[in-house]
Image (cartoon, rainbow, N blue to C red; front, side, top):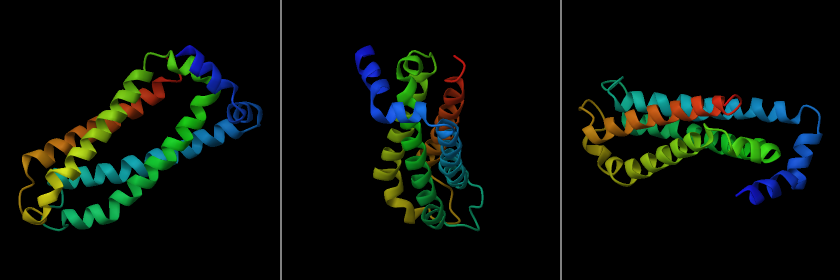
Length: 160
């Protein structure tokens, strides 16, 4: 893998990121905005799944307004994350928190896939003023936990 990481570090994009004043800190700033757009709405949706606002807000309404923001945030965070990885791929890949971050992103993605392919399919049965099924509450806990872990692991990349 070291060869791949070295190749990534030598790409013209990695060199441009390294060599352009203030580009890396700008990428970091946009990455944080992406994280906020991803995790904020996702957490609000998860809290709705856990019962917050059950009598006032349909799950489908929350999904319609919150999840597109999370998707946008994920795209921003993913693109900027890859861009920030390139200039220091060898160093970052060697950090102890790197596999945790990647693993938790994969767990979060798998959780989303399972939730939308199975649990959310019968949302009309529990959309409003009904207890959320255990599978949806479990998905919400996994989501909150995994995205929080991704955030912590991402911050640790700078230090460990």
